[in-house]
Amino acid sequence: MATTKSTVAFSAEERAAMKEHARELKTTARRSPRNAKADGEQDVLAKIAEMDESDRILGERIHAIVRANAPHLTAKLWYGMPAYARDGKIVVHFQCAAKFKSRYATLGFSDPAQLDDGTVWPVAFALTTLTADDEARIGALVKKAAG
Image (tube, rainbow, N blue to C red; front, side, top):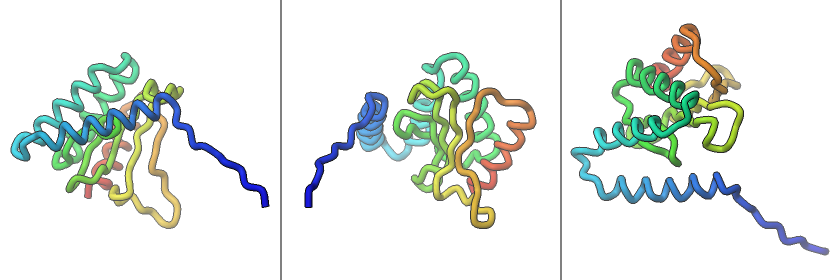
C-alpha cells in the first residue's frame, strides 16, 4: 500500500493570527486580575482604531451593540480580533474583512453563545454595512448569546 505525505500549510494571515494570539496570551498572563477588564476594553478599542475605514465603522458599531446589549461580557482580543467573553470563554467576535483578505467582515458566535434554535442555526454572519434593522437584529442575538 502506497502512502503519500501531505503537509498542512497555513496562509501568512493565519500564521500572523496565531502569533498574535500567542502575544495576547502572554500579555493577559502578565496583567493583574484587577485591571484585566479595563485593559481588555482598551485593547479592543485600539484594535478597532487600527482597522481600515469600512472595517472600523463596522467594528465600532458592533462594539457599541455588544456593550449596550451585554455589558457583562468582557472585551478582549482573540487571534487579533475584537471579542467578548463570558467566564473567560468567547461568546461573540468580530473579524474585519482585511484580516484574511475577505470581501466582507464577519460577526461570529462561539459554542457558549446559547443561540440554539432547533437542530440548525446560524453562528456567523457576513457584514458589509449595518442598517438600523441589522443593528436591532444583532442586538437581540448578542443579548440571547450572552445569556
